[in-house]
Amino acid sequence: MRVSQAISYFYDYHRMNSKENTIRNYESVLSRFSIHFGDRELESITTEEILVFLTQFTEGVKQSTKKLRYSLVSAFLQFHKELNGS
Image 1 (cartoon, rainbow, N blue to C red):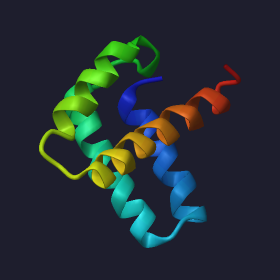
Image 2: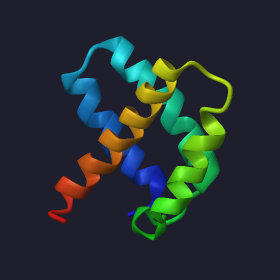
Image 3: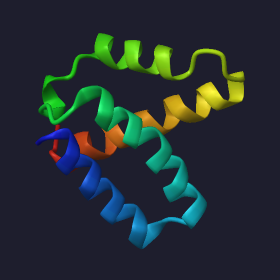
Image 4: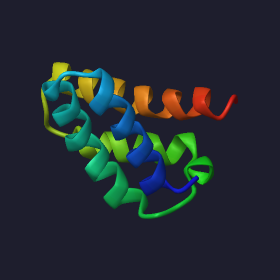
């Protein structure tokens, strides 16, 4: 599944089940994730590439912001892992 499609499914789920602030937080992080990884296959992205993305994206921010961003990306990846039965 392509990154853009995976993000779209994830947003659809959260629009039905989450508060507006939660959705805004995901949009902030996943829009950058989408720009960084383009339209690659989600399964082709390595752990090392995700770590590089998060390190660059969280550079110079407070520890609490880093934790939030890491958690949001982790939740996105876990959602698709469970969706695909992996």
